[in-house]
Amino acid sequence: MFALAVAACGAAPESNAVAGEASVRSGAATHSPKNCDFPMLDFRAASELTDKEKASVAANLRTAFDRACGEGLFADRPLVDSRSFDRSLLYVMNAPEANVTSIYFGPSAAPPAMLLESPFRSPAQIPTVEELHEAIYCAMRGATPEEQERDGRCLVD
Image 1 (cartoon, rainbow, N blue to C red):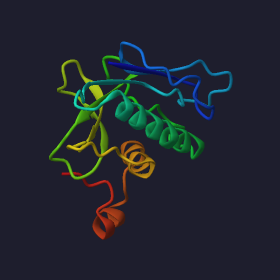
Image 2: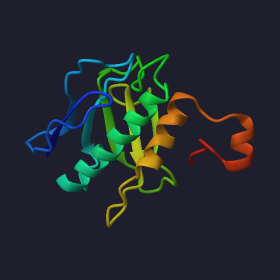
Image 3: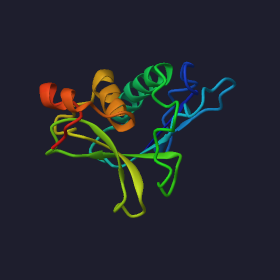
Image 4: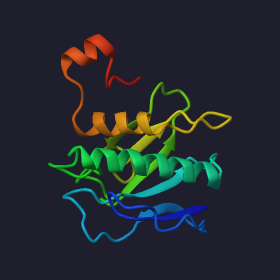
């Protein structure tokens, strides 16, 4: 299991210590832009990842999240959907058949939750900062019909 303490939006991580939990919690912020609190990550549905791989996912997501925060993607709402049972938690799941990393609200999850799915596969393929930023962008804004048609942006299988 795994835990990593990280600081709030725009700050450097406070610690990279590994502990006996399956989550990552954001630290307290002194200056946190609206809706830029980094969610706790739950890796129980990605148990094939090692602690080092989980730390890489968390670090890449943190960088992508901070970039999205700086771009104002969370101006209207936080990343984790308000309908989620736990609005501070993002579930990280292996989706071996997926073609891209995606972040979405799963109303039929038990309990309803915000999910980050990625095709981790074996050996582990950790999503890049760019892939995670794109997943955040698609979850928060989505693509225009033109982008979807031209590039397939934000279209997931």
